[in-house]
Image (cartoon, rainbow, N blue to C red):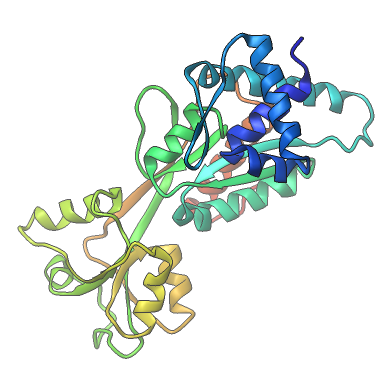
Length: 303
């Protein structure tokens, strides 16, 4: 008979990506993890994992098991919380987002959600690509995903808002006036960028300039995106970034300028079409409220 322990171990490996990391997170020995997997596979009559050079990958059967396994664990958790109000059992909510959206709107939304729902533990998974976010949601590694690209019909897409793109200049290398930069002035810059060539933001910028037969030139192109701010402050060159990042960099000495006409990049929340857990449903509602309140310049209410 398949036991709760088998499901817990299975999902721990899915989330961690390997048996050894799952063992560390569950604070058990790796042989114990391997035994649980072997027992689960005997009960199913099929393999759920195949070993890879980086850990463990799901088989076709394993991929089909993820969604019902998470639903089973949600039901177990709901039953555990039904008994005593003093129970130590906590609901869990897995979210995947790239670091650029973790800063905003991630921090604001998660902080507000935790303020209202202190009985939920939130786990934030990182993905560097839109495809990775989509895969985490489809494979049920996360119930919620944040992305900059509207996804296909296989998931539910919730528009949340837009990030305005600004230009952050080195402290001693900014334009002499406070006027927004035109497209022509933008194309004359040599910028620092950490955006992959196929990234959605770069496509938006490319289209905005291509309309006028202009192009963006790079002085440094780095895959270490977190170093872009340091390159700007070191005087290497300006960088285009979303307003929340640019405003933070301005506090460190950078000079920030608007672009005219404005260039905006949308961001979205995605989730699967299956029924969401109560925690995920509440999170989506809070996310809508917080993002709408920021657009309107007001403070969200939990009433």
